Image (cartoon, rainbow, N blue to C red):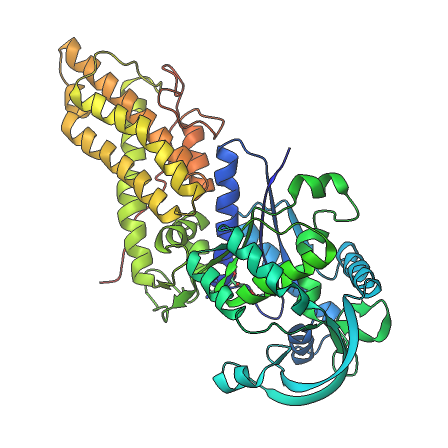
Length: 504
Ligand code: MSP
């Protein structure tokens, strides 16, 4: 059976992981969990890009060897992913043999097929971008450390695939998303495409995969790194896994690395006779505000620190609900606190608290029965039966912020319903009908709270799992109304989202 295969970029290990890296990785984790609650089989790959000039320079700066440098930094990424509840299936490092072997196989095969040739080339080279650039690109001013180089190098016949690539993009509307990015790439492809320089002489760069047909050269870092998407899933080493995963359903990234993924990568695959990925999705960038210091919050200076202070769920929730996929978004401490307090502490946390406390106190900690339903009960039941399909649809269409909005609306409607029905008052009455109405109200509230919690699970796995297990629910893949059986034993739960008190 085909697995839903999703990837993040392989991050450079020249720096600490930051909120931008965390965003794409959380997004991939959320999309993976969205598939899981729908009972689909998923394969989620992330990892690190460890060769090339940037890493070599970072090692020199830290006065270590590149190998020692990458071994230290890779663990920092893995540690942060663990703290953010990222559950990947595989983590690939481009220095691993399973990857370097496949890169060398590919180079050898393409060289033998005459898809790679040697040539002397003179042109402008951007040291910071590690590639040759055109005169026009240099004039546009987006490149740093430009120098003129004349060198013998190896080139991949990328230009040969230009029209085939244009056709593929035009015939497969989901290949590059969102639409604006697709148009950007089609615009780029209006100009003649050059062949791609895929080697670097060892005199200039030692830290890379040696070309199998010329030991004086290493492989250009992008030609090496892009191949991870197939080397990790067993291309030419584990046919079963490869066939289950490929073609990838989603390559996720920000728009900064669109060209390498939408032009270099598909043409490399075409030359290797491998199918192209289904969707390359580029989200926008997070724009950072200076994070203000706050007395009560402490030394929170980096957004990732918010996860350590308030739990990874709160950061995941903020990132997923505050970015419209495809557009840029701003990260500010004020909006983080505001969102946390209003959505998580007030609307969701209080609801969970209220429902569990009332059932624990008045119904012997068991999900109570339903009796006769009135119009308010039926209205909420209908809402809770209809809305999950729309939420799942939004999730599947990368409208994650919309799906979260709908879940929060559903949970808020339970809060309103409780205010109207006031079961705490009904429970004080001596009238049986009133007590039955309270029982019905709390059953329905618990059912809807459970649905909302299962649907929020991909976004906030830790807290929702705590709440589900307090509600006696062990599996996290049923969001249909009525699934929570009468009589189910529930337990007490500490406040899930304590309010963040701001400095006055
Ligand atoms: N090593 C290459 C990718 C090779 S993939 C075969 C690379 N690495 S990177 O460390 O620079 O990571 C870039 C990616 O990090 C972006 O595409 C995006 O996924 C993420 N982000 C980095 N900064 C970001 C923001 N400010 N906002 C959103 N995402 C950001 O490029």
